[in-house]
Length: 275
Image 1 (tube, one colour):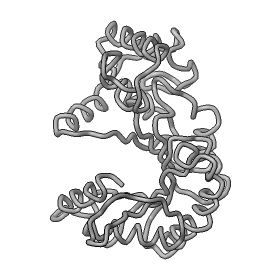
Image 2 (tube, rainbow, N blue to C red; image 1 turned 90 degrees about the vertical axis):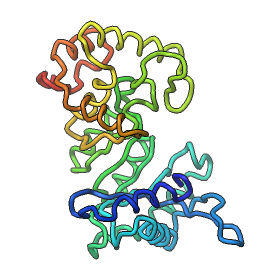
Image 3 (tube, rainbow, N blue to C red; image 1 turned 180 degrees about the horizontal axis):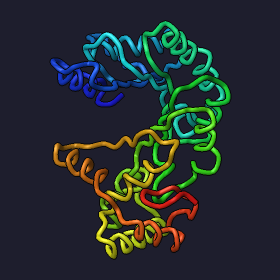
């Protein structure tokens, strides 16, 4: 889906000459690329069938120029994408894609299987219905959205399911701050979200903290979250984010966010004992 295969082709070129054992490589299944009669890629369509999962993975391996990947995620089984067809798509994913991936895991062809969506309630359902190693959740445990913390993250802890928290910047607002052009969940933010972000920025300024550093470190402090996953377009952004993760933020900063109810008083944060 990403660049109609271009992202995987680029990554495959990069991986040549790289020690494959030095990294964890993942991809997603749930869509197949469509081609015109002359072979040109024209788009992508959903396919959660058993054979579709195997075909999707085979095509990914070819683009990546590798024999295997470590992690495979079932992608976008959520109301946002499927609406009234969600129940049918969910059944297809469990009976088709999940069955294929579970067999690949049992054979050792892949090390771990999971699901990637921006809906924690759907992930809870998958957790009850299958045996998953990890979930990728987009944007639902951030400085601005704690909705996953009530039941989903505790469930993952109980079941030893690792969570990969994607979109820790909520698609830009928590990286750029409350300014023109910044987006929240890939759309213009509401006045309420803008105001909350501005209040967080004010606390950041008082303590000399970059809001992007706080946005990356906040989810990482939760014991259920194994990694944050954020898009980076330049080497400079990579270096900046690594620096944000390594910076020690003062406990007083986190305490002020809690006292102001800008984050939950119960939220685990770096440098403070968990409530």
